[in-house]
Length: 400
Image (cartoon, rainbow, N blue to C red; front, top):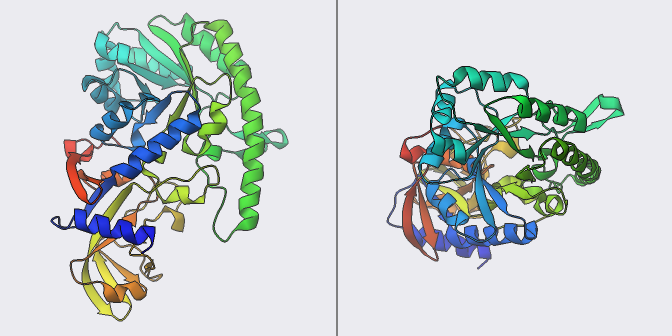
C-alpha cells in the first residue's frame, strides 16, 4: 500500500460516521508542516497569515508553538474580531477603506494597541483621520515596500502590483510623512515577495519554464535583499525605534530569514500545503487540508460523478487554480466539464471500485480559501476525528 493509499484508508475510517461534503485537517501533517516552517526560519519568528488558515482554533494551535508569534490578517474587520478574541498582535497586511472599523479602532485603546494597519499612500492617513468619528487613539502603522523586480529601466516588471513604494527614498519619504502626522506611529515595514514565495519553480512537464523561473527568482532575491536593507536603513534613520521588518512567504522562508535586516517572517499556506506548493524545490510539505465529495452517480465504465466540487481559487484563471482529485489516486476531470457547481464527473480506472456514498478526497489549489466553502473542519489524528472546529464562515464571518 502506498503512503497516499494509507492516508485514504485513515481518512475514510476517521470520517466513516460523517456524510460528505466535508473538510478535514490532518493534525499530524499540520504540526509537521509547522515544524518545517520553524526550521526554515532559522530562529526568526513566523507571523501566521490568517487568510491561509481562516480558523481560530488552528490559529491558536500554531501560535502556541515555539517559533510563531503574531498574526498577519487580511481585512480590518477581521483584525478587530481577532483582537477582541484575545490575539494581541495583529498586523493587517493590506490597506483598508472600512470607515466603521477605523472608527472602532481609534475609539478603543485595547484594539489600537493590538492592531497595526498597512499604508503606502498619504491619502490613506487622511482617510483614517476622516473616519475617526471622535476616536483619539494613536494608530499603529506599517509601510509596505513594493518587492517587484524591475528590468530594462522599469519597462519590464516581475511581481504583484501592490505598493507604489519601491525605492528607499520613496519609503523614507512616507516614513517622514507618518512621523509628522499626529495620531499615528510608524512601527514596521512589510515586504511580500510573491513572485519568489508564491510561484512554483518546478512545473511538471515544463523544464524550460521551470529553469527560467528559478533564474528569475535568483535574480529577484539578490536585488530585493540589497534594496530591502537600504530601505530599512533609510527608515530607521527617520524612526530609530522601528519594531519589526516583515518579509517572506511560505516558498521563500529560508531565503528571507537569511537577510539580517528582516526580523520576522510571514507565512501560512505552508501549514495546509495546498496543491500549488507541489511545484516547489525550496521545500516539500505534507498535504494537511483536504475536502471530500460523495459519489452520487456511476454513469459508465471508468466514470463516477461526485456532488459539487467546483471550488476554483483566486488568481489568473487556469487549470492550476482548480482543486485536484487526490484520493483515490488516478482520477481526473472530464475535460468537457471540469469541476462543476453541483456535480463533477471523474474519469479513470479507480472509478470502477467506487460505490455510491464513497468519498473522493480533493486538495484545494490554495490554502485558506477552502474554508470559505465549509463551516467546520474535522481534525484528524491517526484514524480518528478528535475534534470539529468552526471556520471563519462557521462563526458567521465572511470577511472578504
